[in-house]
Amino acid sequence: MAMDVAKRAGSKARWRAVWMTLAAAVLTLVLVAISVVAYWRYATWVPPAVLPEEPAPSPNGYLLAEAALRQLRPPHLEPLQRPTRRNQRDARRQLLSHGRPTLEAVRRALLHGWWRPRELPRDGFPIPFELLACAHGYAVESEMAGEAGDPDRALDCALDAMQLGAKLSHGADGDVRRIATMCHDSGYRGAPSAVAAASPTATSAALERVRGIRSEWAPLSALVENQRQHSLRAMSARFRYLQALPAGQQWDAYRLEAWEAPDPTSEALRLALSPRSRALESVSRHFRDLALEADKPPHQRNSVPVPDEPWTRAWFTGARRPGWDEQRATVELTLLEAALAVRAHRLERGGYPRRLTGIDRKWLPSVPLDLWEQPIAYRLRNGRPVIYSLGPNRRDDGGVPLDNPQSRHPSGDLVFTY
Image 1 (cartoon, helix red, strand yellow):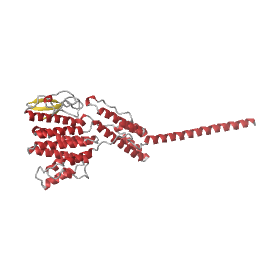
Image 2 (cartoon, helix red, strand yellow):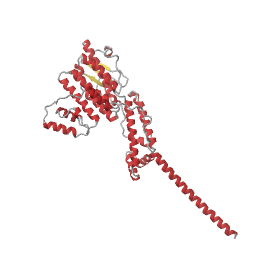
Image 3 (tube, rainbow, N blue to C red):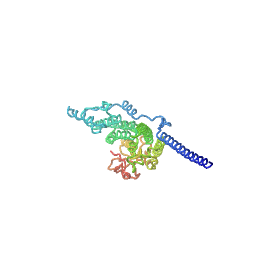
Image 4 (cartoon, rainbow, N blue to C red):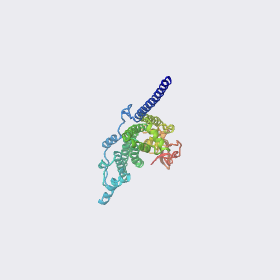
């Protein structure tokens, strides 16, 4: 009897132990599930205020450029060729067939009298390309004024195009900054011939205007800051889009995000589990580091490594880093200032100066420095002035033009000659 009682007691104890083990296992699974769900909610949570520490918004380059257009005037162009119905129709078709109209398409439209820049339909064209077309209209007008023997007007129109570029550089991301540089280029190309024949009054006025245009160009750190704001907003929108996808489609989306990685599957898993708030902080911090380097002269900038965070690594894969070429317009405006000072000296004294330091300070208070903190170089070649910056290699190549600005180690100088 006593043995039966003992056996029943032992059996109850064993069952109690089994049930307690099962209960503990179930509780553990529930806690693990809660932890996974909580971590997933934390990882996929997108902060409602992406830019909480945002400073006052930078000026909008589009609005500044359009205000400059109203303040200057729209380009006034007569057809460069006798318009016919056929060539006007062909020019119209070529211009409207481009989502982003090329300069050649704009030139054809101007040549055949189909279009004047301010008449461009706003519906199908991004604003920056309207402004680029207007800048090109100024350049064509400058060319026509030069051919008509009016160098003062030619110089003024060229500066109009450059001023549009300077205005557009504010509040611009990388693509729009390049369009601003193209606006500058369209005017700068016609400047040498206009400077060589400008009158004393026009030269003096152009000097002051060039200094103002150069000071209007937004610094490179402002471009990086604009890219930071744009990237954070775009990343937040992307995260919310991924969060709204059905569970079955989310994994495909993560694999698509990681398609350039050596192991897309493992990288997609890391992207899925990486907290979104940490990714936004990492991207923001990386852009701030880039902005600190952008404030330095090009030869003093250090490379900023991309943080080892999955979303940051994916976001910057193949991204173009801003370089000195984004600041090329300010160097060329510095060269143009020195060229105008040389022209003013010649008009006043009857000959070219031997050195830039020999120019009266009312025209050139001091020898300007380029991006690399080197003084602008000057020499006479065959009796004509050659004004140049030593360029990225910081070596005097004798006024030989830069061979390939996009190469890693370009050789040559940034040259202005007339």
